[in-house]
Length: 268
Image (cartoon, rainbow, N blue to C red; front, side):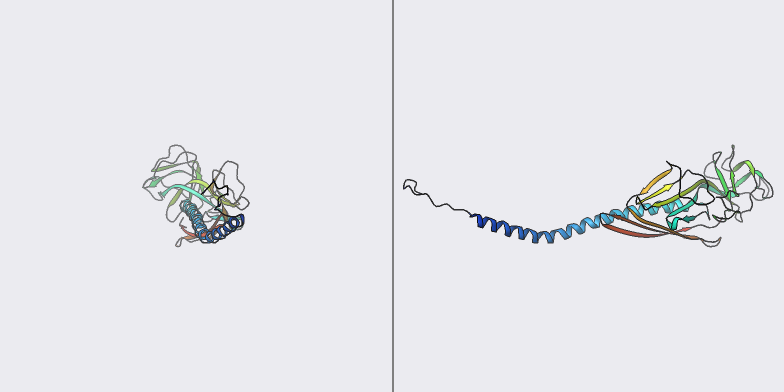
């Protein structure tokens, strides 16, 4: 270029119109590309959210299954349209001596103790309760919620001998000579307002099932719960009961529903 001639050299570049046109075309191409990129990313994120929900739901259902299978036979009851499940948890159990020799459990009078056939896993602490021949979660006979078949364990109990204090007369003998050491009632309650599933324990026995509990005895089991429905088909001494749990969870626009069934022993 010759600057000595006094002429302005030619300028190479884009005009404003060309620049706007290029930006518009780039925007259109970017928008078209985003359609192809967004769907796979959204699908991946959705699958990840569903996977998290499934993992959480399976963990919750597994915990409830372990809990329920430790329950006292024939103690399951359901209320609030299927949103609340209650049962009596047990920590141990065995068979009592029903015939001599040894200290039998007398079913004709108030008895203060009996021998255990075999042995328990550990000596039950004083103040814990045991139940014999629980038949149903309702009625006045063979109902641990009422307490007619529930006795208090006294001091001096061991893995092979149970002390009852006070002495207790059980209404019915178990055909299998079975007794169960109790941990107390446990409830799983779905709260629709907060979308939570809560496990309640360390509360007293109620003749009528309740969903009102003392403060501080509930453990949060799951959040993001859309619904939790319990149903139970009672069994017999020859057939197990069947607990059905339908759990739905939702998060970030994703929703999953799992159906889980638990076989529960009904032989008291």
